[in-house]
Length: 169
Length: 326
Image 1: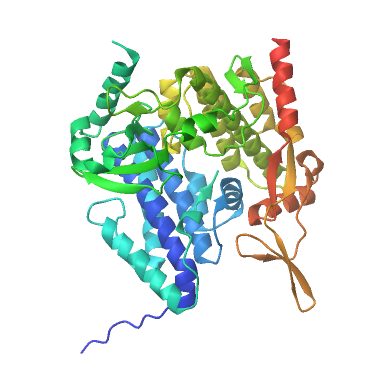
Image 2: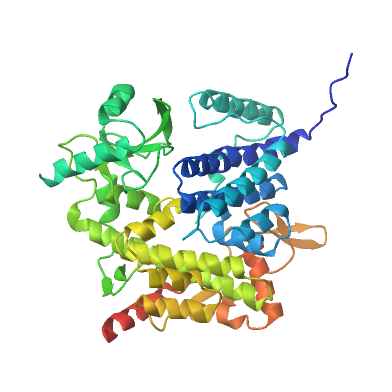
């Protein structure tokens, strides 16, 4: 019998850091990637770059949350972080071109970079995430939220204020 | 064709961009849509969107005390995002907007910032399209210009904050290219807002620039922004000469910091759940002149000990002065 891979997670980290990071991923990263795909289908390369930029910025925010950052993040603070950091996602974001007056090649490249950043982040999350904004994924997302709330209850943690996790303008 | 019928026609045209009709929405929404007056809002209503766009609906409801959290429907594979709002809310909120404004080449700009922070909602209500041909606009047409003036003021403030942040990073010795680009982005957003094309989801900025017919010379100038002199030059080009965010911005202690003592150590607990041992930077942005001072201020903003705020009275005075000089 082949043993299953040994996987363990710090339950408090999962309930306080990974859960909100997953929420941000579902709300901001997933939806921006959908925008990237829609823009590509429409050959809207400028829109594609803007959506890719939003996706990667949300990935940066998720990474901060995975490392203990709590709550809403002001956009200015996040962009200063991107300016100063040497992590892969900040470098990716800084390397994107201006969205105005660009063509297919740069648009497609921005999409690839955003997808890579999102895939790497998703593989670091401790559970798989359904596609919230779809008829198939909506109810599984709700169930995931319920399961996380139950875990938090067992750990003596209060319910999550999900709407407080956002990039604030 | 009357104004109401025209808006209704535009609503049908906007929904066709995602392959839906008003009838599709009404059939699938059923009783959910019957509880109030339904309006199409967001990027589709503002003339943007593509086949992958969501349909955003606002329902104005008689007996809802507070706005509801959004909920989703799926119609022929298209996500329909519905929010309910009290029918009195748009009038109540817009009646609090100051009517003091200045007419500049850029457009109408409010002279006093509004305390109501939800730009997205103001934009959506100002540009909403009715799903029924008898529904009036959410915001009276006579007030839409005032709302636009306030949205332009908000865009101006965002430009100044972006400028101040880029300036600080540059002073601190960082490569501020990315921040100057965001500053250029904010200028384009401001020019669009001033031209009557209010903010919409950030990804639509290039489309807004195109829709607002912003001259190529302005776009090219903004693309070249890599420093304070460029920003000043571009703002002069769009009709805001002599403004200087570095003189108008302050570094302030961030709200919500709490002192914490652990043994002999004293910390500040930030709303982001971090313990910091540094005191928050405070003072005019122009006061952080040398590299070390600018880095201290920038790091305080970055970690949430401080924030960049504008002297809004001074901004208003600057706008008045530009208006008077015209």
